[in-house]
Amino acid sequence: MKQLFKIFMAALLIFAGCGNINQAEPITVAAEPAQVQCVLEVGESSTHNASISRRMRRTSEASREAAVIVRSMDGMVRGSGTYFTLNGHHIVVTAAHVIQGNPLSYIMTEGGEMTVAVTSYVMSEGEEDLAILLLAEQIESRTPMELEILTDYSSLVGETLVYTGYPGHHDRMTIFGQVAGVERGHVIMNSYAWPGSSGSAVFDARGRLVGIVKAIDVNRSPWGPQLTEDIVWLYPMQSIDLSKVTKFLDVYEILMEEQSQ
Picture 1: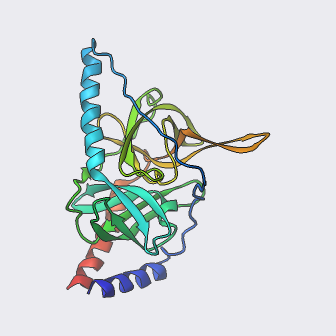
Picture 2: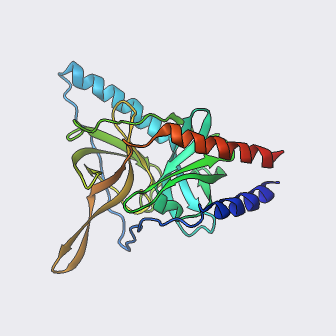
Picture 3: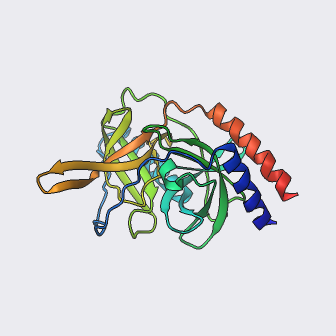
């Protein structure tokens, strides 16, 4: 039945146009991932800062418990994603360039749990880079976060953010950073990322989704392009209409239920 479901959904999604997505260009590098240590500095003498620290710790733990691996069906592409619930739907949020236009993806954990997810909502035109996947079944070893988006970026510069992903050869890494600016509509974070981090959800201290890890900076020099892994580009989530996303999820949920009967 699961195999029939996979074949049916793949054909349906390709017919609907979801299998022909203009994906963003992924970062490909051959260098060994760098060692990184991330420290959240908090003024212990300040009650306000201590409160932020407690909130950030809770958020970082929640992001860690919701982090998953997103892998293509052929096993050739691997990125990161985050497990959420949205109006009763169990979903994974990732970057569009991670799924590369595929209608189906494997959602995995480093502990070996695996399920299938259906590409249900994609934004990949121009510099857009967002994919929302509907899970065929819940991930028992992970705890989903409730999806809440930060919609106001006016005071975001200087704020500490956190994400959990799978950079390079590493398993789950929880990484902090600070917002350096907003450029070309993207949030720029002084942090760390590497291929494999793409698709990770990035949160503020209150657990609100700020953006999705999209790329690291590439600078030109006389010796050729230089990857700058501590300047991280986030695809912004502030304008995403969750009511619209929910409508798409409702339709795909019905189709999945019909096929499971």
